[in-house]
Image 1 (spheres, rainbow, N blue to C red):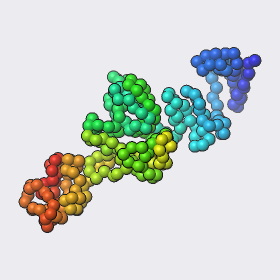
Image 2 (spheres, rainbow, N blue to C red):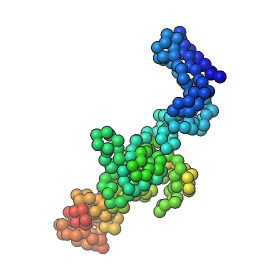
Image 3 (cartoon, rainbow, N blue to C red):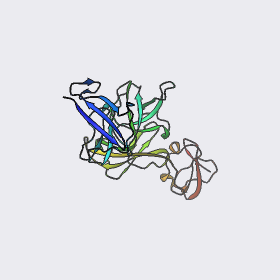
Image 4 (tube, rainbow, N blue to C red):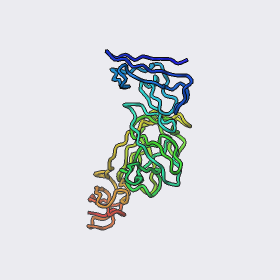
Length: 277
């Protein structure tokens, strides 16, 4: 038996007929008729109210209230949930041979022609040359040639925060560091560029960890005054980086700097070593 629902806004009424036997892209119980009283099938409404006790969307393309977080959520492909006004997701495609897992940090890797569809790759290895390539964290697993989403801002759950090299704790900032060993770390970089990638909201093993993603970019500068052993590596600091040390073994201009002495001198990186100057 068909059910007719009327939506009344001001002096306009829309009649929507739901037929239990109807079947279309969404399956049974599809809306089969939606017409206004003047036959235009167009209706403007003042507001739309969701069931406030709902647990969120459960199928692709559904929009629903999510009571736990107090947000209107949409379910995207691969069961990715986007909370309106809270999450910012970037549509990406993995075209590498390296599968991307949910929660992996990912980087920009070109586009599909002029389509604007961004390609993504894992944030690991020597191919990550700059922090500015950071795209966020994978919201879903992506095999080769599979589409997905990068979380650029918002909450990302299902993260193992203590299953890697480091044991992340609540409220720690997680940094994305480029270079030959491009990785994530809870240790603040002392030289070179980096992205402050996320904050640990809830530390947990397995799938109980939660990150809040909100990247920002910066460059770590060498300390203004330190000992030679306190300097970051010259290569990480980059050519032209400057600092000042208080225990240099020599004060000869452009000599290789080393500790163990009593000379207070400025030093400069040539990209591989620190020099007096």
